[in-house]
Image 1 (tube, rainbow, N blue to C red):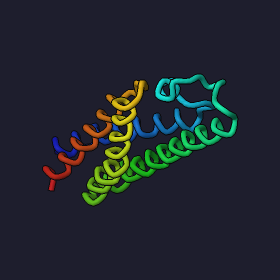
Image 2: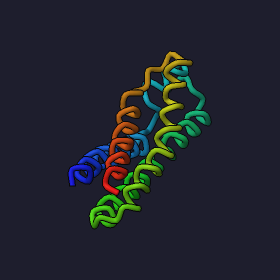
Image 3: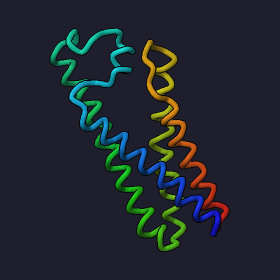
Length: 140
């Protein structure tokens, strides 16, 4: 029971963060300040067609975060909430399949540009997913 409760708590944090990050990115009218730092420019100095493309990429990533958060939340509430172990494994593995590459990309921006993205948020999401997945392994 303890492992199940740990999985629920940490998966809930990961789901909430994934959804909120998605919501933030999907609703932006311009790229994030750390993206501008990485590009070493201001939003106004970026050509309109590039602004459109950057915003489209950012918003598209945001919609993916929203849909991933909803997907994981449904699995967490319905099948995993009813004790179906496959859902717990699916949340962890599907979540990590998206979060690990994104973390590597954020790390690359942080180390290869002057941008300072919040890498700690992605590390937190990954840790929560790993702890939730570990809880599933201890359950069964």
